[in-house]
Amino acid sequence: MTFLTNHEIIKHARRNATGPVWDYVCGGSESETAMRRNRQALDSIALRPRVLRDISEIDYSTTILGKESRLPLFLAPVASLQLIHPEGAKASDDAAEEFGIVNMLSGHTQPHYNDIGANSPHAKIYQIYVRGDDNWIEELLTGVKKAGFFALTVTVDAAVYSNRERQMMHGWIPPTRRNAAGREYLAGLDWDTWDRMAEIWDGPMILKGVSTAADAKLAVEHGAAAIYVSNHGGRQLDYDRATIDVLPRVVEAVDGRAEVYVDGGFVRGTDIVKALALGANAVGIGKLQAWALGAGGKDAILDSLTILEDEIKIAMGLLGVRSLSELTSSCLAKSRPVAPAHEMSAFPHLGGQTV
Figure: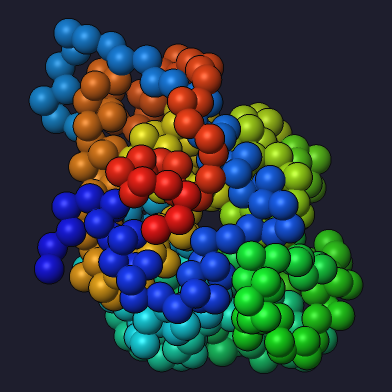
């Protein structure tokens, strides 16, 4: 089956998912305000079309830390993908290989990084949650590098695990929370730990979970190759700000000294275009990746990426820009959302918040 819209993909994903897993994929923390703010902020940005410009050729390809990418996006690290589809992260890796983009493998998903490293030759990134001492870190990073991952993402916004009440109401706890071993190391993570990891890794490192310009500046000073603006999809600190609102301040603070990525509610090609116009180098796709995986594994992810590609091309063409470098804040304007914000509000034909 070929999906023509992401509406269809979400509908099929819901039919295939159990209730608790669906809540795990879709929900946020506590009141879910941070998650809804991500979407509300994106919906509060309008696009400003320009006309009579030659857009017969549009180039939306880019590089991510020097690696070629067909689109200015990557498959974000999502934990426990094996709960969503039997192939888990392998299906995402296969899709990234076939489509020509980078994917980040979560350290809390399956299959094992050795299997994913051997699965395909394209450029891929490993994402780590620190769950051990220096010896644990050295052993893991040595193995990850040997498996062929070219860059390392360090997630730093999970020092304390949040209350994700939508799934908790069903009495269901995901594997990442059931396994408390080593969580004290996440709580004790600091810049000294980062520096030790940098010495061991000796390659590009990405700091994920940045929400302030101050932390972005520190990350650059400590040698980060990329700053990843993220509030964990609104799944960690409730009442956090929307990532698209934080993004311009981080871009300004980084001042070209590192690449800047962002995620948090990005499910449309127009969402991605907005982030690029505000200075992001690439956008992470999380929930949409999970929905597509649940709808039909690798093939559905490929369909979803093709839909995003078409949406990006349409948006750039109607904005009158031919390349990503022409996307600037002049393409954007403030506006008022036309519907209440929730995880499905970008898909009005679903008929409501839940499907």
